Length: 224
View 1: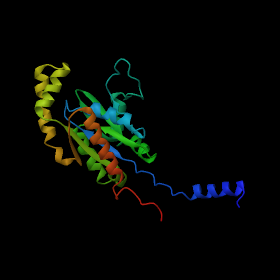
View 2: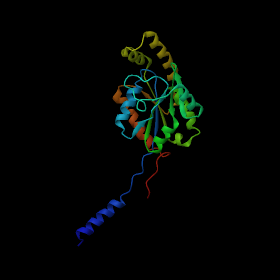
View 3: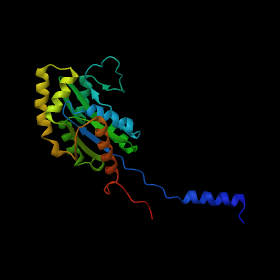
View 4: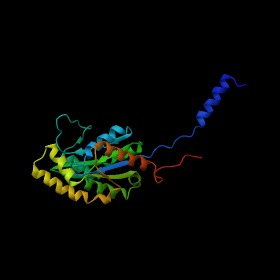
């Protein structure tokens, strides 16, 4: 008959022999969408639903808005400092929008991936194309990258833009014209999500994340 200490030792041995689940591979989830598709809402919901997911803080040359903090909302840079980083090749993608420059630091992105974090990027179609091109020559990015295009019909996009009440009709028409061009690029993405309500958009995005983590190209079977 085993003593209490022997039983305890046996339990410890069983615990020690319990197979360890291989860590899930980190993903670089890139989401693009035309105005009114609900991209910002989806990004925020994903970050709430996935504690291991994080975002890369974007650099910008625009002035901080009330309540925004440097290093939290954006990295606020001078135009000269931003240009130096462009010339040094520090950005994985950058663009100028309405006179202000925006860019994502490659170092920040890779540091988060190497720490095992899923990284979420919210970029436009042009930025997505730049990142896809870089991933073709960089195995670390290629292995992690998953691209999602979120959209809705033009009628729904127009309705959502007008419901916001933030833009004049001329601006809305310009956004819709841009949306037509962006939607034409959907075949360049890994996944197409037709926006419904925010709960359905989140469910579909989570399903994509889960399935991508189980792809044999990223995962490894446990030792046997």
